[in-house]
Length: 307
Image (cartoon, rainbow, N blue to C red; front, side, top):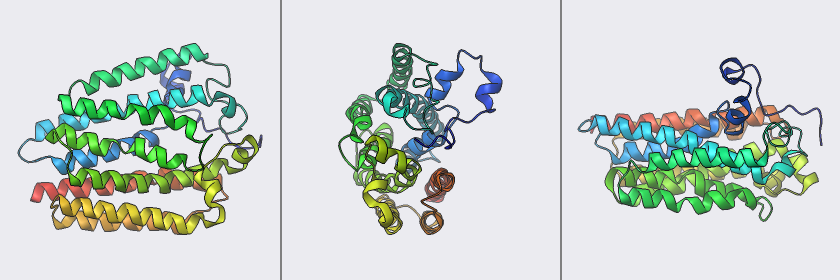
């Protein structure tokens, strides 16, 4: 283990300033202090809601669904991270970047973590109950993926693919929440999101590749190694192509394709400029995917408003 590596828990942020000491480990376990994962989970759902909605005719319902998905993404990402920390506690203790997380550092017991995970999950279920029955069933169907994901790094070099299946489920759920069905644009958007996740989470996995080798954890970063850069272009090209096909099926107006081109430029920049041997640069490029998410969302909303 590289003891010089920086912990992934930031200090001096709003958690330290505003929360009582007893609540801080729980906020950190849910990653409330590191919102990039919530954004990456949220965007496919927001894209799908915007694509399926008649925003001008029903702005109230549009913003209500967007707010529900925002709350749902925050709490379910927190529940998923808590579950991941419970299952990975022995691995986390061996990696400098994760050794100070609440469970391996002893700030939170496993029983307390389970209670916190259940509380977050129940909050997410309350959010899900605000939708119609079909959307509720679509949401429940994602639980299997959430449950198996933490174990995939023990089995396959492609846990990032399973993460993509889980993290982009909102593309299906968002459409279902608006239209009470799942049509081609949602399915294509789901595939696009999987490609997107394969790109950004492979970048993320390069932060831990040396420790992962030592402790026997698998990842796409280890599978691809020196071939990662060309594969990033392939993954992100898949994301762009399937997003364009989704927009075409949804008959989006021309401003979306301008936004998509700007988003593509952002993904090309990531792939071309990434330093895969610099954990700090990998984290920065990973976080930059939030900009891509906003480009796509903005393009969909503008296209729908002028249609």
